[in-house]
Length: 251
Image (tube, rainbow, N blue to C red):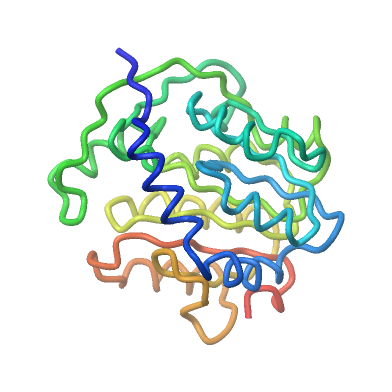
């Protein structure tokens, strides 16, 4: 069974992520990670607010989004922009074919992870979420994206519990990246930290929810970041962890 996200849900996302004043805050925050002519990967591009920000900063962007209706939206938003490449695919540990579970009422949380769906069931803050459809989707890897498009200066991963699987498909460090975490699946984020620690000498910081400011006073190593994550109250729900080979970017 396959259900596309409904127009009302997409409209809600557009209003949320393109709300007045948000672009300026997003640009100011992401500006520490990219500059003009850098290449960035927006993995889980959704309605393209971060792609738009990265373009305003002058970076070239590969926007990856597996939901066909959102791919069409991204095409309408960025189709005339030669600095944006839109790809309708999942990102995982190896190339092939995967299954994307859709939440037609809340397309922000489409996921390729059945474990994510199980973790959300009955969890506080996730009440009423229903994954009511699924589609087959091609799967690529971060290594394959780099081979095809070039080395990214910044990678954003927001793929609902599939972040560690995606990082398993990255064999060389990139300068900076971010990945979403949820308190219902802390293990996924801890696995991401382990993967990055194996790739390079990364420093870390974090943001809560959709806030665009770091919660820690300065950059920390993976072990400290892991302890912060483990101590975080369940009510924090979600956020993003940022990693960089250059400490100044996560200060």
